[in-house]
Every structure is written in structure tokens, then in C-alpha cells.
Length: 365
Image (spheres, one colour):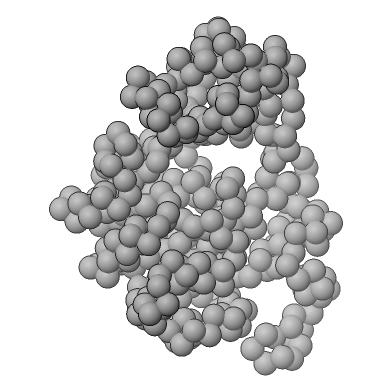
């Protein structure tokens, strides 16, 4: 089975698949450019799945799987690549999903990410949130941010990940990468001890609970730059999700903390490229300026759209601004842009050279 498994992984790399799905009673499936496709391969039975698990899982991970019904890990196949893996039980049998990790670091320009990320990377203290649904490019974006900081700042970067995906070498700065269950117990424990590790920049792979967020915002308050992620799709939803983590009697306090420590939010959605060769991100960007701080503190989150609309010189952009740029550059089709836009009528007007001013309710040409 080892040779067959290696061949399967090689095929995934050759086809530039982002994910491999293995399930007993079915052939392997690949996700390619966001679309699930079955592969010409032997139907996998339970014994074959067990053999594959024997290849990938350590004894401790196997015990964790038996006890919990699921386990996260990273797996490297020499000469093929590195994968983030989730193994889980479904209908009494073992299945797994393998996310391919593209280990080559790409620049913001190569990934078609906003220039504002360079500003975020050079901030000395505060919190930056990178958000989006699963598979929207958050991990790749964070890896590029760490690489940029590593090459431009003399600092110590500590990452807390589950699992480690991109491996960073030391350049102008040094990078310490800690993996959950291997190097530390959990995110909140790692964040509590990180202060004794002399960090300048802290990356938290995922904000999973209230305790983790409290530790992260405390790190930002004490003079560190903290990057983390949330599974939210826009700026307003992101702030609401954070506040909802806390009991209602703490909402005023957390809004105040956010207004003081949040420096920026970038929300991502991956879209199919016009030439069919992959996907490209559309990004909404908020840079927290005095106006945004006031709105967050006073719980007037809906008015942040107006801050974004009037903040282009500061590096802000709405999703429709991003879609407009992608369409004009020929990276996505107009049909794709109109289909995914939250406000296609507004996007259509922008494409015609007419912009609605959300601050004044008027029309700008």
C-alpha cells in the first residue's frame, strides 16, 4: 500500500490539488480549483485505509484517534510534499482529508494580496485579523506575512500552529514555530507562556475560544504584534463574532479593548481565475483609524462600511473594490464578480465608473 499511497500523493501534486479525500468504499477524490473530482484509482476498503493510517500516524496519534474519534497532524512524504491531515470517524469507519501545503513562500504580489499587508507587517504592536472560510487562503497569507516580517525586521517571531504547515528559516529575524500537542498543550497555554519567550511578533493559527482570544489581546496590550485568524466572511461579522465570545456583561469592556488594540482586518474569499489556472483572492480590508475606533467602541459596527469606503488612501478596500480591480486586471470574469458580490448593483455601477458614497448617500463620479 505504501507505493500506491505515494503514487496517489504524487498525482495530487501533479494535478495541483489542494485537498485529498480518502474514504472507505470509494475512490480518492481531489479538490482542484475549488471543485471536488473523483480520481481513477482503486476503491479504498477499510483495510487499505488502516494501512494508510499506519503510514501516517504515530502511536500517540493512533491512541488519540481511538479515544477522540479524530486527530490533526502534519505528514511529509519525501520527494513529494507536505500535507496537513485531519483523520476522523464517520459511520464507524476511518476517513481523512489531506490539505497540500505548498512549501514555496510567495510574495504578496505573487498571491495578488493587497499592499496594505506590508503596512500591517511593519506595525510594532496591536492585533491584526485575517479571516475567511475554510480554504480561503488564510494560512498561505499568514505564512507570507511571517516571511515578509522575517526578511524585513530584526525581531523574534513566535508561531503557534495546529499543525505547523509552512516551515520558516531564519533571515533578518528568527522564527520559533510551536505545534499544538507536539510542542505545547493548546493555544491558550502557549499564549500564556509566550511572554517569557521574548517575542516581538506572535502568530496564533486559530482563535478557537474565549480564553485564547483573551490571551491574544493581552499580548497585544502589552506591546506585541499579534496575527490570528477567524472563520468569518466580512469585517462586521468578524467584530460581532469576537464580541459574542464574551458574556453580555463584558461586551462594553471587549469593545473598548478592540478599539484600542485592533489595528486591521482583512477578510478573504478565493475565486476562480478567468484563465482557469487556479484561484485568486478578493479581499475586504479595514485599517483601524480614529473613526473606526470610535465606531467599534460605541457599538456602531454597521457604519464601518463608510469608513472603508472613505479610506482608500489609507489602504482600505471593500469586497466590491477588490472585485472591480480583479475584473479590470482580467484575473476574474465579470460574471464571477457579479455572482459573488454581496452588492452586485453597486459593483455594476463601479464598473460603469459611478460610485455611491456610503458616507453622504450621494453619487461620486
